[in-house]
Image 1 (cartoon, helix red, strand yellow):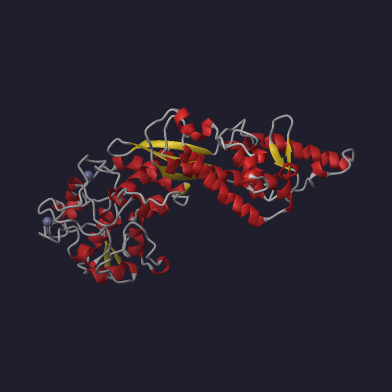
Image 2: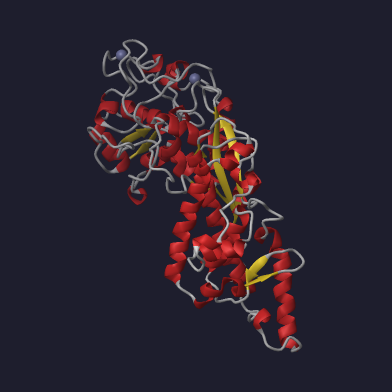
Length: 474
Ligand SMILES: [Zn+2]
Ligand SMILES: [Zn+2]
């Protein structure tokens, strides 16, 4: 026992190994060291640390004893040693994204790191292909016999002989070959190369992002592997960390979209596909509107006021259903001609023979401009635009609540009505960019982003931003 540790801390009858932990060390090697020092089999180990038994087999995508997430741990029952391992769980760094961007199906390790008894939870992120410290490939197979590594979880298989191959018994690094190797465990390892990634993950943890936020427009399931999906998610999130100011003040929502070969705009304009998608969404909303049923629906043109100065159309009455206002906003952004009659047609108050064919604006049809989305991605965009319009309509209603519909008042010379009318028009000019298809052809809260995946291929996502804390009047 020449390499007996110099420092030991006792908790009950458990010896802790704090002195051999390096920065950003994952929970797997932390728990492995505790297991070896204390000579504990998987079940007593799991009991001592987390007050539950290790699992034998766990077929679920995220193991019930995963080191990615702490959801299976009852924090109130943890002792000091168990609580000390929590910092090494990936979710403690990147929050709820841990299981979205990383997998616990197999331990992924760097050989030179393992030689020193080190492993970081960051190595479980599929998009990280090489150790940021050494540049060596992260592997999920025994380098001696090729057997797959165990789950990155506190399972019986993983901790029967921790950090060793269950096929050939070989350690995943020199530090794990035989006895607890205190000397190697306490050698200095410079982990500064992990810190940029570590900090980005902390920013990701604070992002308020919905993913994926929209119901799949098309019923064709994605053919990408779950590993590729995790890589795509990670890369998309990483893009957002370059905008920390936006990220902290906004709700950001990303929907991956597939790119298609570029087509000239005249070809898209004459294509019936996108018009069919648009009309299908329009039909759905119109049928919802008919269910809402309001007398104002029958006289759509009388329900709205169009501002002479900026051409913005808003409801005359506060009782106008936001859904109808949103429908109006949305069709204005999408359709080229006479929107009021288009809305009346969509709602069934005008016969089809009376109306001109639906013609969509080129800027909308060719979204996102310098890229080309496939029809499914474009459908996501069209639906996202409607959801934005609905949010705007609800917020507009909140903004002018309390002005008592000044456009509807009988006496325009009454000082109270005048004051309310002024307040209403002030709000209208404040809101005009949001409510005007002339100023914002596409809502400014909708965008697209691109990134390169590991193979260098271009990926794209539909992004919606929603500033938080702006609904001040409700
Ligand atoms: Zn390494
Ligand atoms: Zn092996």
